[in-house]
Length: 220
Image 1 (cartoon, rainbow, N blue to C red):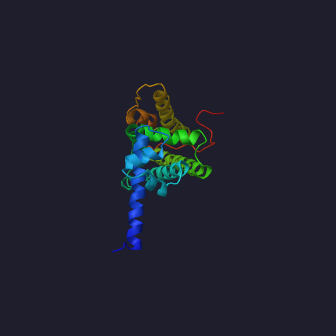
Image 2: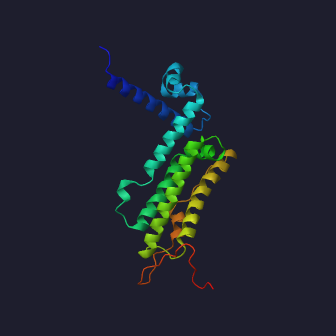
Image 3: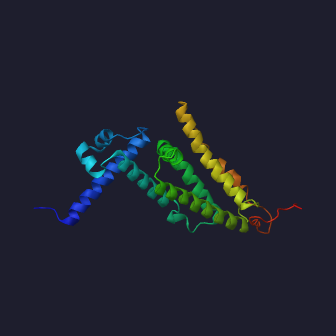
């Protein structure tokens, strides 16, 4: 008996998901660029079937990158952290970013290399840059809230966000250099990066966040 349209669609979705999962595994093992022969072998299908879903390496590359962007968007705000205090939410964000880079270094090297070398299509590049912008804005809002609650050190929230993001971005660049030099990557424990937040202020009044452009203490 022929399959229904719904059943056919489900089969196609499963097969496409199987091919994308195979592509991710190849990336994690450092097998880039991905050939259709390698993809088909990893997914356990024929090359002809792989080409039916991805007619070219460019089409596969785009599909993999779109899948990566959807994944990073899903990581942005885990539902279980929304009720936590601001500092705890910052800590969870930083820990998640570092742990995912530690768990899948090749995955992130491939993504960021594509972002920086011009191979990422312009529309996907815009989405990735927007993802970074939203992350920084969310992080800044949490820093301001944590400062107002006296949970982290006082100071310019923009400077603190720049320092934290630069630290994390610098780590994946170091990972890439280590990989090119054949050296193992050693990432710091999340608590080391979190020292940028400083200890919780012990004063009785909450720490005040400095507005962007506002004069700092002691400034003329």
